[in-house]
Length: 538
Image (cartoon, rainbow, N blue to C red; front, side, top):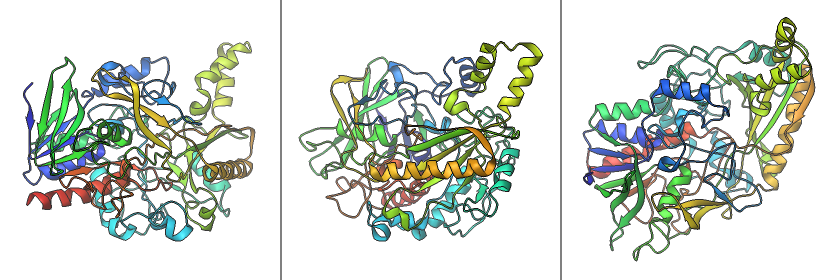
């Protein structure tokens, strides 16, 4: 394969890379996207998921040395962990990135989330405010196609309506809303990048209940939407092309991204500007592997902040059996939540959280309804008796998950493993991670809230998970800020160290807040694209 050349080289084809590529290509800029993974055939992914013995977010997609990635059911695979707690969130490598298996939740951060240090004395402030980002949130909702209802989240004022009406609430949602009426728990439709009506050449949601790991009809947004739009406008995509290092010159300019193909062939991609958008785990891994005489600590790392401040939304999972049928296991995996608990003075003492109401019954905590069938069979039930008992049990499964805010900690980090490497010669990610008292207090408060809700609903057989779960949100590791000594990029996502290098994605988040990160990733990417276009004079 010949070397690659374009005005802009983008590493990673997830939502950040795809949106930036589309924005640039639309202005006549030549763009080349390097993607370690392959293109995904949707029908094959659906079949692979249905045939998988272990059904996890990654089970629809291949795993192996060609494009290796972590597995949620085996946190010792690919990741090398040496912290007091396991980091439990994962991603895949594919054209379109991890948006293939995301839930689709597309929530704005609250204005207070951008000023955590100023308002609560915790973490750091963002170098950009909600008001500065609000118009980009609106554009991101339009680009991704977000369905929602006014007032969710309640503290985030809006200049525009949602592009589409909210996904209709399920019967289970309506029961929660009725039982919690008049309480502090305000049940509202969850904004989600999922068509509620036909839009943008994609159908409305048909309720297949497999949003994680794959929407069979692409009603749920994934980044191949913007990859394809970018290609239509002239961008090129290079699948199965793994970036291995970033090269800089003596003046601090990035001059190439080196890559390797599956057969061992090497090459380099050169351009005027470079964007690393390879998620918050692979981005620092690539930068840290780019050691040279000019960059002895790795590229963009004069601050020693690359890889640091790794965060997630550690989640409290709880499940119970309702007294009356609520009929889960239908529709998108979650259509409503409780968003009014994310701001308040308590954030000086504990992490805030948002509550997700699950339509997926006990499938996450127990593997139901398959595990329900097994348990009933073990009791000797067969035939019509088994069918009746399964209906009685599965129709009463309820599940809550609270996503808890985590503070940045420089000791929570990814480094390069000293001896183990992938097939391309890049060291495997070594993770040091722990949750502190701020998170633990948030998890405890979430479990209490779950108990209140279950009591109001009328439930038995209540369970609160003893340990936190991951939320699939890999945050931090290349944070933005105004001070080059304490951050990696500025408010426009430009590297402090290299004026022609940009870093996009959740890696740049200074704090985690409680909102699922994708919509904020998209808003920041649209904003960064404007800066890149200005730099190019396009």
